[in-house]
Amino acid sequence: MTNEDRQLGVDLGDLGDELKSADYPLSEDELFDRYGDEEIEMEGNTTTLEELIGPLNQEEYQDYGDIETAIMNMVGDDAIGRKNYSDRTPPAAGEQRQDEGAPDQDDQEGQESF
Image (cartoon, rainbow, N blue to C red; front, side, top):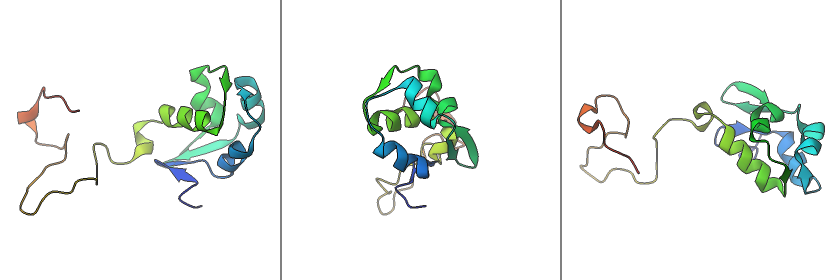
């Protein structure tokens, strides 16, 4: 498995390659007839493509990007890793920063995060 096979904690495995090379557009029925029983791994859990994106009731998928977006929109918090974590801006030298939503942040109750 390469990093391309896993995105945001979701492992499409061979399904990702099959979906990338499929002929589009695909109706939802065609998609599920061909690939609906294919399994997707997410942080130790497994589900089928149809179970994951079926509730969206999308009539047609124009390309692989549409399917990938649908998958990423439907995965739960367990698949995305540590909640409220970002490695984009590390604390500056001498700065003490607590992760947003971390325990013991009672003084920030009611504040919104953007």
